[in-house]
Length: 117
Length: 218
Ligand SMILES: [Zn+2]
Image (tube, rainbow over all chains, first blue to last red; front, side, top):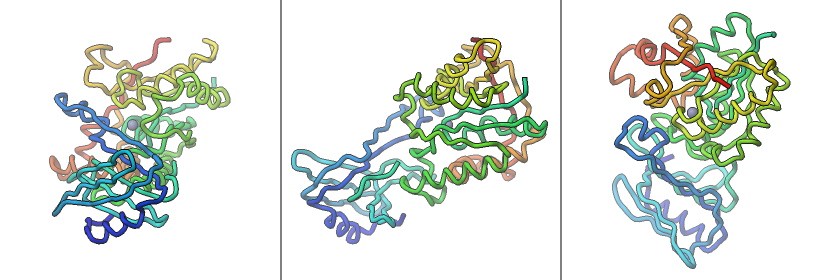
Protein backbone atom coordinates (compact mmCIF):
# COMPACT_ATOMS: atom_id res chain seq x y z
CA UNK A 1 0.00 0.00 0.00
CA UNK A 2 1.08 3.59 -0.58
CA UNK A 3 0.62 6.77 1.44
CA UNK A 4 -2.65 8.41 0.48
CA UNK A 5 -2.60 10.85 -2.41
CA UNK A 6 -5.89 12.54 -1.95
CA UNK A 7 -6.55 13.47 -5.60
CA UNK A 8 -5.78 10.00 -6.91
CA UNK A 9 -7.86 8.32 -4.23
CA UNK A 10 -10.81 10.69 -4.69
CA UNK A 11 -10.95 9.73 -8.38
CA UNK A 12 -11.08 6.04 -7.48
CA UNK A 13 -13.86 6.66 -4.95
CA UNK A 14 -15.82 8.63 -7.56
CA UNK A 15 -15.36 5.83 -10.06
CA UNK A 16 -17.15 3.39 -7.74
CA UNK A 17 -20.09 5.68 -6.94
CA UNK A 18 -23.62 4.86 -8.07
CA UNK A 19 -23.02 1.18 -8.70
CA UNK A 20 -23.48 -1.97 -6.68
CA UNK A 21 -20.31 -2.41 -4.63
CA UNK A 22 -19.16 -4.67 -1.81
CA UNK A 23 -17.75 -3.15 1.34
CA UNK A 24 -15.27 -4.48 3.86
CA UNK A 25 -15.13 -2.20 6.89
CA UNK A 26 -13.25 -2.98 10.06
CA UNK A 27 -11.58 -1.53 13.06
CA UNK A 28 -9.62 -3.38 15.72
CA UNK A 29 -7.16 -2.92 18.52
CA UNK A 30 -6.35 -6.62 18.56
CA UNK A 31 -7.56 -9.58 20.54
CA UNK A 32 -4.76 -9.17 23.06
CA UNK A 33 -5.27 -5.52 24.09
CA UNK A 34 -6.56 -6.26 27.55
CA UNK A 35 -4.18 -9.22 27.92
CA UNK A 36 -1.11 -7.03 27.53
CA UNK A 37 -2.61 -4.09 29.40
CA UNK A 38 -5.32 -4.88 31.91
CA UNK A 39 -6.61 -1.30 31.79
CA UNK A 40 -7.26 -1.54 28.05
CA UNK A 41 -10.45 -2.74 26.40
CA UNK A 42 -10.76 -5.11 23.49
CA UNK A 43 -12.85 -3.42 20.84
CA UNK A 44 -13.32 -4.26 17.21
CA UNK A 45 -15.95 -4.57 14.53
CA UNK A 46 -16.01 -5.77 10.99
CA UNK A 47 -18.49 -6.21 8.21
CA UNK A 48 -17.50 -8.07 5.08
CA UNK A 49 -19.31 -8.07 1.78
CA UNK A 50 -22.07 -5.64 2.60
CA UNK A 51 -23.58 -4.75 -0.78
CA UNK A 52 -24.44 -1.07 -1.11
CA UNK A 53 -24.60 1.83 -3.54
CA UNK A 54 -23.28 5.23 -2.55
CA UNK A 55 -24.27 8.40 -4.31
CA UNK A 56 -21.24 10.36 -3.13
CA UNK A 57 -17.98 9.39 -1.50
CA UNK A 58 -15.41 11.77 -0.18
CA UNK A 59 -12.01 11.65 1.43
CA UNK A 60 -11.06 14.47 3.77
CA UNK A 61 -7.98 15.13 5.86
CA UNK A 62 -4.36 16.01 5.57
CA UNK A 63 -0.91 14.79 6.42
CA UNK A 64 -1.02 11.39 8.02
CA UNK A 65 -4.66 10.67 8.66
CA UNK A 66 -7.83 10.84 6.65
CA UNK A 67 -11.54 10.25 6.97
CA UNK A 68 -13.74 8.68 4.33
CA UNK A 69 -17.51 9.03 4.16
CA UNK A 70 -19.84 7.29 1.74
CA UNK A 71 -23.34 8.71 1.47
CA UNK A 72 -25.96 6.01 0.96
CA UNK A 73 -29.59 6.29 0.03
CA UNK A 74 -30.65 5.81 3.66
CA UNK A 75 -27.45 5.98 5.67
CA UNK A 76 -23.70 6.42 5.80
CA UNK A 77 -20.46 4.48 5.84
CA UNK A 78 -17.62 6.12 7.71
CA UNK A 79 -14.00 5.34 8.50
CA UNK A 80 -11.48 7.47 10.36
CA UNK A 81 -7.73 7.02 10.50
CA UNK A 82 -6.92 5.63 7.05
CA UNK A 83 -3.46 6.60 5.84
CA UNK A 84 -2.59 4.16 3.04
CA UNK A 85 -4.32 2.95 -0.09
CA UNK A 86 -3.98 0.58 -2.99
CA UNK A 87 -5.95 -0.34 -6.08
CA UNK A 88 -5.11 -4.03 -6.12
CA UNK A 89 -4.77 -6.45 -9.03
CA UNK A 90 -8.42 -7.44 -8.87
CA UNK A 91 -9.43 -3.80 -9.09
CA UNK A 92 -10.46 -3.57 -5.45
CA UNK A 93 -9.91 -0.26 -3.70
CA UNK A 94 -8.19 -0.86 -0.36
CA UNK A 95 -7.76 1.84 2.27
CA UNK A 96 -6.26 1.21 5.68
CA UNK A 97 -4.68 2.88 8.67
CA UNK A 98 -1.69 1.25 10.39
CA UNK A 99 0.05 2.07 13.64
CA UNK A 100 3.83 2.62 14.02
CA UNK A 101 4.42 -1.13 14.24
CA UNK A 102 2.57 -1.74 10.96
CA UNK A 103 -0.53 -3.17 12.62
CA UNK A 104 -3.86 -2.54 10.98
CA UNK A 105 -6.17 -0.31 13.02
CA UNK A 106 -8.89 0.48 10.49
CA UNK A 107 -9.75 -0.63 6.96
CA UNK A 108 -12.31 0.40 4.39
CA UNK A 109 -12.34 -1.53 1.12
CA UNK A 110 -14.65 -1.15 -1.85
CA UNK A 111 -14.99 -3.66 -4.65
CA UNK A 112 -17.33 -4.33 -7.55
CA UNK A 113 -16.90 -8.08 -6.95
CA UNK A 114 -17.43 -9.75 -3.57
CA UNK A 115 -14.35 -10.15 -1.39
CA UNK A 116 -12.94 -13.66 -1.10
CA UNK A 117 -12.66 -15.79 2.04
CA UNK B 1 -0.73 -47.83 21.26
CA UNK B 2 1.42 -46.43 18.47
CA UNK B 3 2.43 -42.88 19.27
CA UNK B 4 1.11 -40.04 17.12
CA UNK B 5 0.70 -36.45 18.23
CA UNK B 6 -2.04 -34.16 16.90
CA UNK B 7 -1.74 -30.41 17.44
CA UNK B 8 -5.02 -28.47 17.25
CA UNK B 9 -4.72 -24.68 17.16
CA UNK B 10 -6.73 -22.08 15.23
CA UNK B 11 -4.03 -19.76 13.84
CA UNK B 12 -0.91 -20.12 11.74
CA UNK B 13 1.86 -19.22 14.28
CA UNK B 14 0.07 -20.64 17.37
CA UNK B 15 2.12 -23.81 16.84
CA UNK B 16 5.34 -21.81 16.48
CA UNK B 17 5.02 -19.71 19.63
CA UNK B 18 3.20 -22.32 21.70
CA UNK B 19 4.48 -25.78 20.91
CA UNK B 20 7.21 -25.88 18.24
CA UNK B 21 9.87 -26.92 20.77
CA UNK B 22 7.72 -29.76 22.06
CA UNK B 23 6.85 -30.77 18.49
CA UNK B 24 10.56 -30.81 17.58
CA UNK B 25 11.32 -33.07 20.54
CA UNK B 26 8.63 -35.53 19.39
CA UNK B 27 9.86 -35.46 15.80
CA UNK B 28 13.45 -36.11 16.93
CA UNK B 29 12.16 -39.32 18.53
CA UNK B 30 10.53 -40.26 15.23
CA UNK B 31 6.99 -39.72 16.51
CA UNK B 32 4.65 -38.47 13.75
CA UNK B 33 2.94 -35.13 14.34
CA UNK B 34 -0.13 -33.80 12.53
CA UNK B 35 -1.19 -30.16 12.79
CA UNK B 36 -4.89 -29.38 12.36
CA UNK B 37 -4.82 -25.62 11.81
CA UNK B 38 -8.26 -24.03 12.01
CA UNK B 39 -7.97 -20.78 10.06
CA UNK B 40 -5.50 -18.82 7.97
CA UNK B 41 -5.41 -15.95 10.45
CA UNK B 42 -7.23 -13.89 7.82
CA UNK B 43 -8.10 -11.12 10.30
CA UNK B 44 -4.69 -10.73 11.90
CA UNK B 45 -3.71 -7.12 12.35
CA UNK B 46 0.04 -7.63 11.93
CA UNK B 47 0.82 -6.85 8.31
CA UNK B 48 4.60 -7.13 8.61
CA UNK B 49 6.82 -4.28 9.72
CA UNK B 50 7.26 -2.41 7.45
CA UNK B 51 3.87 -3.57 6.16
CA UNK B 52 3.96 -5.89 3.16
CA UNK B 53 0.52 -7.52 3.48
CA UNK B 54 -2.99 -6.15 3.06
CA UNK B 55 -6.24 -7.51 4.45
CA UNK B 56 -6.76 -9.20 1.07
CA UNK B 57 -3.27 -10.67 0.58
CA UNK B 58 -2.80 -11.74 4.20
CA UNK B 59 -4.60 -15.13 3.94
CA UNK B 60 -2.38 -16.37 1.09
CA UNK B 61 0.77 -14.97 2.72
CA UNK B 62 -0.04 -16.66 6.03
CA UNK B 63 -0.89 -19.88 4.25
CA UNK B 64 2.55 -19.95 2.63
CA UNK B 65 4.19 -19.08 5.96
CA UNK B 66 2.28 -21.92 7.62
CA UNK B 67 3.30 -24.42 4.95
CA UNK B 68 6.94 -23.35 5.35
CA UNK B 69 6.75 -23.59 9.16
CA UNK B 70 5.37 -27.12 8.88
CA UNK B 71 8.19 -28.08 6.51
CA UNK B 72 10.69 -26.83 9.07
CA UNK B 73 8.97 -28.81 11.82
CA UNK B 74 8.47 -31.81 9.52
CA UNK B 75 4.82 -32.22 10.46
CA UNK B 76 1.79 -33.18 8.42
CA UNK B 77 -0.44 -30.11 7.94
CA UNK B 78 -4.21 -30.05 7.51
CA UNK B 79 -5.88 -26.68 6.97
CA UNK B 80 -9.46 -26.83 8.19
CA UNK B 81 -10.84 -23.77 6.42
CA UNK B 82 -12.56 -21.83 9.18
CA UNK B 83 -12.40 -18.07 9.23
CA UNK B 84 -10.30 -16.18 11.75
CA UNK B 85 -12.29 -14.58 14.60
CA UNK B 86 -15.46 -16.53 13.85
CA UNK B 87 -14.79 -19.91 15.48
CA UNK B 88 -16.72 -19.08 18.65
CA UNK B 89 -19.83 -18.47 16.53
CA UNK B 90 -19.71 -21.88 14.88
CA UNK B 91 -21.50 -24.85 16.42
CA UNK B 92 -19.07 -26.43 18.92
CA UNK B 93 -20.64 -29.81 18.16
CA UNK B 94 -20.05 -29.45 14.41
CA UNK B 95 -16.47 -28.31 14.87
CA UNK B 96 -15.88 -31.18 17.32
CA UNK B 97 -17.32 -33.62 14.79
CA UNK B 98 -15.05 -32.16 12.09
CA UNK B 99 -11.99 -32.56 14.32
CA UNK B 100 -13.07 -36.05 15.30
CA UNK B 101 -13.26 -37.03 11.63
CA UNK B 102 -9.45 -36.57 11.55
CA UNK B 103 -8.78 -38.00 15.01
CA UNK B 104 -10.67 -41.23 14.46
CA UNK B 105 -8.44 -42.04 11.48
CA UNK B 106 -5.19 -40.96 13.12
CA UNK B 107 -5.94 -42.49 16.56
CA UNK B 108 -3.53 -40.13 18.30
CA UNK B 109 -1.80 -40.94 21.57
CA UNK B 110 -1.64 -37.24 22.45
CA UNK B 111 -3.58 -34.12 21.46
CA UNK B 112 -2.16 -30.65 22.11
CA UNK B 113 -4.61 -27.74 22.12
CA UNK B 114 -5.56 -24.57 24.01
CA UNK B 115 -7.10 -24.62 27.47
CA UNK B 116 -10.68 -23.36 26.99
CA UNK B 117 -11.40 -20.30 29.10
CA UNK B 118 -7.69 -19.66 29.68
CA UNK B 119 -6.42 -19.10 26.18
CA UNK B 120 -7.12 -15.34 25.80
CA UNK B 121 -8.14 -15.25 22.12
CA UNK B 122 -11.79 -16.29 21.55
CA UNK B 123 -10.70 -18.58 18.68
CA UNK B 124 -8.24 -20.34 21.03
CA UNK B 125 -10.94 -20.89 23.64
CA UNK B 126 -13.51 -22.10 21.11
CA UNK B 127 -11.17 -24.42 19.20
CA UNK B 128 -9.74 -25.83 22.44
CA UNK B 129 -13.25 -26.59 23.67
CA UNK B 130 -14.10 -28.32 20.38
CA UNK B 131 -10.83 -30.30 20.48
CA UNK B 132 -11.62 -31.59 23.96
CA UNK B 133 -15.13 -32.45 22.89
CA UNK B 134 -13.67 -34.35 19.94
CA UNK B 135 -11.37 -36.34 22.25
CA UNK B 136 -14.37 -37.15 24.43
CA UNK B 137 -15.96 -38.95 21.49
CA UNK B 138 -13.46 -41.77 21.91
CA UNK B 139 -14.25 -44.61 24.27
CA UNK B 140 -12.28 -44.05 27.44
CA UNK B 141 -9.76 -46.81 26.72
CA UNK B 142 -9.00 -45.39 23.24
CA UNK B 143 -9.02 -41.73 24.23
CA UNK B 144 -5.84 -39.74 23.62
CA UNK B 145 -4.18 -37.81 26.41
CA UNK B 146 -4.89 -34.09 26.00
CA UNK B 147 -2.39 -31.37 26.88
CA UNK B 148 -4.18 -28.04 27.18
CA UNK B 149 -2.21 -24.81 26.97
CA UNK B 150 -3.24 -21.88 29.16
CA UNK B 151 -1.93 -18.40 28.47
CA UNK B 152 -4.26 -16.18 30.51
CA UNK B 153 -2.60 -14.08 33.19
CA UNK B 154 -4.71 -15.77 35.88
CA UNK B 155 -4.20 -19.42 34.95
CA UNK B 156 -1.62 -20.33 37.60
CA UNK B 157 -3.69 -18.70 40.30
CA UNK B 158 -6.91 -20.41 39.19
CA UNK B 159 -5.66 -23.79 37.95
CA UNK B 160 -2.46 -24.28 39.89
CA UNK B 161 0.85 -24.77 38.09
CA UNK B 162 0.86 -26.69 34.79
CA UNK B 163 1.93 -30.32 35.27
CA UNK B 164 3.81 -30.46 31.95
CA UNK B 165 6.69 -28.01 31.65
CA UNK B 166 8.91 -28.70 28.68
CA UNK B 167 12.26 -26.94 28.67
CA UNK B 168 12.73 -26.42 24.93
CA UNK B 169 15.98 -24.45 25.07
CA UNK B 170 17.98 -27.43 23.67
CA UNK B 171 15.90 -27.26 20.46
CA UNK B 172 15.36 -23.51 20.49
CA UNK B 173 17.13 -22.98 17.17
CA UNK B 174 14.32 -24.89 15.48
CA UNK B 175 11.66 -23.05 17.45
CA UNK B 176 13.13 -19.71 16.48
CA UNK B 177 13.32 -20.76 12.83
CA UNK B 178 9.64 -21.78 12.96
CA UNK B 179 8.63 -18.46 14.48
CA UNK B 180 10.61 -16.59 11.83
CA UNK B 181 8.82 -18.54 9.08
CA UNK B 182 5.73 -16.55 10.08
CA UNK B 183 7.37 -13.33 8.95
CA UNK B 184 4.20 -11.26 8.69
CA UNK B 185 3.49 -11.98 12.35
CA UNK B 186 7.03 -12.23 13.73
CA UNK B 187 8.12 -8.77 12.53
CA UNK B 188 6.07 -7.06 15.23
CA UNK B 189 7.39 -9.33 17.97
CA UNK B 190 10.98 -8.92 16.79
CA UNK B 191 10.68 -5.15 16.95
CA UNK B 192 9.50 -5.40 20.55
CA UNK B 193 12.33 -7.73 21.56
CA UNK B 194 14.88 -5.66 19.66
CA UNK B 195 14.24 -2.72 21.96
CA UNK B 196 15.46 -4.79 24.87
CA UNK B 197 18.29 -6.83 23.42
CA UNK B 198 20.74 -7.16 20.53
CA UNK B 199 20.57 -10.94 20.35
CA UNK B 200 16.97 -11.57 19.34
CA UNK B 201 17.21 -15.36 19.48
CA UNK B 202 18.68 -15.28 22.99
CA UNK B 203 16.06 -12.79 24.22
CA UNK B 204 13.26 -14.81 22.68
CA UNK B 205 14.63 -17.91 24.39
CA UNK B 206 14.20 -16.42 27.87
CA UNK B 207 10.65 -15.46 26.94
CA UNK B 208 9.58 -18.65 25.12
CA UNK B 209 12.03 -21.27 26.37
CA UNK B 210 9.47 -23.27 28.33
CA UNK B 211 6.29 -24.73 26.85
CA UNK B 212 3.77 -25.72 29.50
CA UNK B 213 0.51 -27.61 29.42
CA UNK B 214 -2.14 -29.01 31.73
CA UNK B 215 -3.07 -32.64 31.31
CA UNK B 216 -6.82 -32.46 30.77
CA UNK B 217 -8.94 -34.32 33.32
CA UNK B 218 -11.96 -35.82 31.55
ZN1 LIG C 1 -3.68 -17.66 17.99
